[in-house]
Image (tube, rainbow, N blue to C red; front, side, top):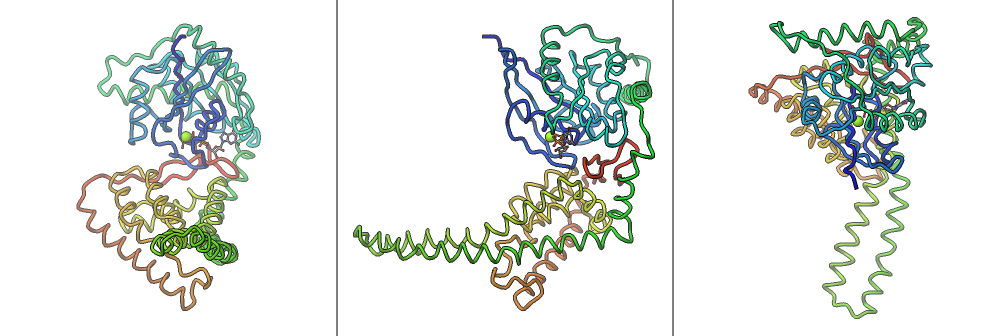
Length: 442
Ligand SMILES: Nc1nc2c(ncn2[C@@H]2O[C@H](COP(=O)(O)OP(=O)(O)OP(=O)(O)O)[C@@H](O)[C@H]2O)c(=O)[nH]1
Ligand SMILES: [Mg+2]
């Protein structure tokens, strides 16, 4: 049996690589509406026309000259030469920036297939992509897709098979032998080429395309309304999590605690000694029942609500709104998101710190996440009040957490690892920018 054909899945962040990976392999890689979710390679397999394929989902990259650890992972994998075919996923709504990477990749890897994803979003933004013109200009197969709805996936499988069986010849390579800074020269040439190709293959009604996004961004990220809207939204989520969880918490607690005596009776009936009964019922069972009834309902409310905000593309706006304040404490705006996650569960909050690129700021976020009270440390569920007698300790823990964050950050300033600004986002529905748009903080 021949070895599986290895396909590398590359592209800018948040263009739908993992969505395509999941659709082809039927696995469940994390997808979400912000850049930088995939931080390490993931592998999956699928079969098409009896041939086996291994798909490698790589972290998003803007260029082959890495500016972050994730880009390094992608670059190193591509240069390892393991992949037989490279699938470049591009966002149809901001093709120019995406093509710059595709052009660079075609220089170092072959055969290449380009998948222009998010055609549904492009249509909504009155952007038309001429796939045939793109194919002509790039010199490699180009497939259109809207992967979330499953559109174009059959064509993609076929194009991958064709590329694996008949790689064709690589287009002429760009030469910059005489240049002093080869990397910069290649990057500039790729950008110029991408701009020229986009001009030939993409038509857009810019005013219509930007109207809704700009209007939303004016409300959600402006100085006057951005912070109040954000505070109101986060307060609502917190209130729903704490007050709303009381009802299922009490129900669960009543149900699970009610099983204690029957369980005790069962053990006594079997003649279990008193110490075993105590260890099993008063120790293991009661603790588990307590933890489940206290922690499960808030988590079951908080995480879906947070996911809704994520899928709506609102979370990067929160990071953007708070970046200025966090920078004053020597931290990164994205830390606000990991601190929010910490409210649900500190373990998830710490794991989420992977989204912060700078090692120094990531370390700060990890060390200080424990000062955000997770729902296990919230006031007892019966209170349901944030600011009541029982709510006061929560507020105190919070303020202490923020105080400690500043203090630790001051110490961390001694660690001379450069900090990184927020990168440019391209969130999908309901608002996401194009190559000139999006949220950018230097
Ligand atoms: N409307 C629409 N949304 C899509 C499509 N493909 C992916 N998405 C959404 O785009 C967002 C990003 O998708 P991912 O698959 O996580 O993107 P990625 O390229 O793996 O992102 P990183 O791992 O961060 O680089 C998610 O919210 C997806 O649901 C599509 O064809 N149409
Ligand atoms: Mg991904």
